[in-house]
Image (tube, rainbow, N blue to C red; front, top):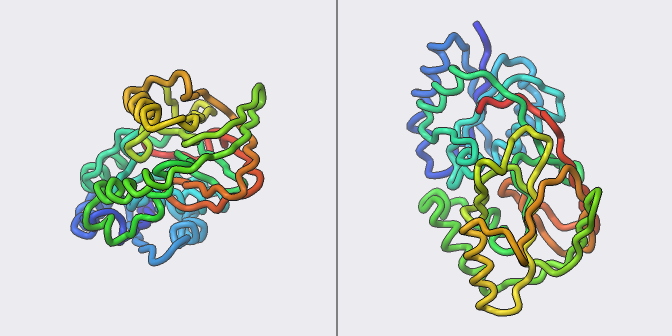
Length: 292
C-alpha cells in the first residue's frame, strides 16, 4: 500500500478537527493509502516530523492552521523532501487556504486531495527562514501571533478582530528602506507586507487575477504613514476596495533587502519573527509540490 503521513495540530482553530479526523482517514484509506498519524504538541514539531518521516511517505497531509503548514513545509525543504503535500485547513482564519479556494470541511478536502495532482508552489525566504504566503509588519500584524490560542479556539476569526482593535491605539511608524533590483523605497510606513496570497488577515485582499502561486513573483505592499485620522480612514478604505494608488504601493518582486528595521517585529505566516537590522527576501520558485 501507498504510505500517507498525516500531520495534525490538535489545538488549531475551533477544535472541530478532532471530530473529523476519522472521516478524513477513511477517505485516504479508501484511496489505497496506509495512514500514519503524527500529532504536533509544541512549536516546531511539524518541522521535525516532516524532516524525519516525510521522505518515507508517498503523500503528506497537514491538518492545522497556516502556522502548522509553515512548519511542515519548512521541514520538507530543509530535508529536500519532494513528496506531494496536501493541506486540510483547520485554523482560525485559514488565509492561505482561502486564497487557494481549499475546502475547510476535512472530509471534502481529503476527497479533493486524493482526486487531484500536485503542482509546484513558490515559497518565500526571509533571512534563511521559509514562509508560505506572507511576511508582514505594521498595523494588525502583531495580532496574528499575540492573540491567545484559547481565545482563537473559542471565537475563531472574531478573536483577531477583538485583539486587533487594541493596535489602533498603538500605531507606530515603520521607518524602512526597501531595496529592489531596479528601485528603492525609503520612508515611513504604517504597513509593509510581502505576499503570495489574495487574502491576508482579512485586511489585505487582492484580485485573483493579480496573484499566481508559481510565477516566481511575490507581491510587495507598502502603506505610507498617514498624516491624520481622516487620511488613515481613507487609506483603510482604499485597501478594502483594492484601490492601490497614492500612498499605497503595490508591485511584484523577486527579491528585496530591507534595512533600518532592527526594532520592528514581523509576522511570518502568523508566527512572530524578531526584528533584525537587515532583512533579505527572495522567492524560492517551485519550492514544493502542493495539491491545490
